[in-house]
Image (tube, rainbow, N blue to C red):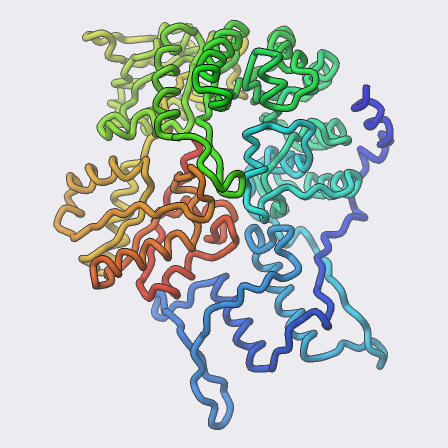
Length: 613
């Protein structure tokens, strides 16, 4: 009822109209709040900002800049001091992370205003901000409709005991504005969105909350559906998935929901999530199936009040969810950062191992795919299994399921092509699903023998649909580790002619990497040191490599130099910790180039996709 009343407050014509009146505005600090700087300091500050946006080249090769000299008589060389950490007027909206060119403009204007006063018709004018003249000039690759919807996920109606936003760094915590202001900005983003090329206005938000409680969510979905026919994948805590809301969502198909159910027990869900009406989310699984809206179920097992209570509830929740044919059930291993708790909450290794064992046992008892996240935790202790194309689940009623593919099958060939690893299997299955072919064949190893399965791509019913699912319904433990990364690693090292190389990896990837490097023909003769940086920035039990920040890498390089007594010739880092903005910046907005500037060791980022599973 409350959602409908709020929606009625936004007139239909306002929902439909374009947001021509909306301007992307950005603040400037008052001149009296700026530190005193001289003309030379302004030049140095601008140089620092530029070095965070670009890499100087000479003859096509990177050049390290450690100083400058002004072009005036008798000017002495000046060393380039460490960049200032003073926050500026954009930190609170993540401009330094997502669109540092805006930040550069801010810094330029603010530093100039510390030296000069602007005039209009001979009179001083006070300038406190600026706007984009043409937002169309600022389109960048975005993650599709999901990125636009995430702009509306700035508030939440529950208070989960394990909430990752409570443990997020201050910079990434969501900051809600007036919903009407957010609504107009999102309409402008939709108007500027180019669906086929996935270009849109740069994001400017922290960690997402609950998108479906935005007062204008139906108007946003209406406008976005008019713009694109792509699938809307919406994460939700399920608290407002009443039968009425489910009917409204149905009209935006293709749509898929990821429901953070967490517990099928009303009492435990109420305790875990602060949900005053837990039955709404629990019963939504029944109503979603009736409406034939595909959905997945997410469970975060929280080891309180005891591990035994957690495991018992996990088993009951998985059993309940599996009975209502979700596309899959995801068990997310519990984590927390130092921002969430400064003290150790539980022995995460022990808890994670117990959860893994229970999930592996439950897989044998349910018909829908049951996956563990992070997926590599299931396999990292057996590096030879990480890239194996072994099936851990099949989406019910999918083409793969109808063809007889089973959990435990090892895929050997797809349409006659030999499958060498998991990435290749996933790629081939995706190509076939998108190709328009009517049939495909898969050869599998099963219980000591080989079988040939014929897949009819048109043979499927709910919950599978080609718009909302991938790989013809085949589910693997994780995306694996691309073996091609080792070739890119070798290319980077050979281009520098280095022999003594420090490779910074993560706890889950390092075992595979160490074994693969020894077997690689171009890497075996190098002095390759693999180290795992400690994630001291996020702290807690967070150790995923994609969540490391520049300071973590700097500390790891300096520790290596101190221990070895000599610096490596180069440092190699996977690019995934710096993928978020597309500008080579970490979660704090610092560019990776500062690692080299602070350690003095050349740094190469080797392209590597983030491991989302």
